[in-house]
Image (cartoon, rainbow, N blue to C red):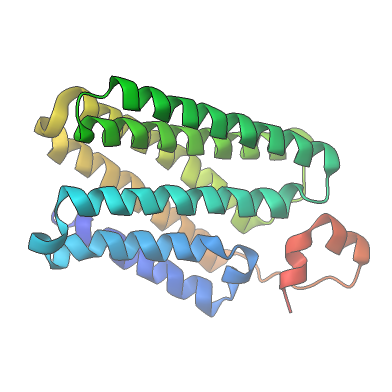
Length: 229
């Protein structure tokens, strides 16, 4: 664990640098924000544990993660499905359904939770699961409609979906067994996220540079090309 903890922020910082140097951030603005936020938030407790290794900071950073991941899912959905009315309508319906389910789960948590700690854990489990399901739906629709997706967008989905499912399991273990399993589930979560970061970094370093197309049809079907020079 002593090696895995600092490795995550280090690899995350490397990924942000790669995205910046290769100008891949133009393809998805929220993605580098997400990676940078997580890297900084995970680094602070390592450097200053007395200040940041506490319940309040954990709740704050996890809440920020949820909001950024939802923003990431919405940006990807707009870039991928915007030009395709049928697929975009399906994504909107799935998004609304997912938000309603997440809201219902959060409401049930408020009623059933015995204390604030259990409430926060249960709500974050519901939000993490809902976000993962939304991203699963996006990836499924991409494959179902065989849409033209940039390799970076595909890598984001393929990396984030399994990690969020693992994270939901981690939170459920904390709810079921309490802080007695904190060390074990922290290692599981840290290793899972590190694996995703390594995958994203490898893909970001090897992706061919995409250029703007002069064809209005291509630009219409792939709106992310309009962000390129």
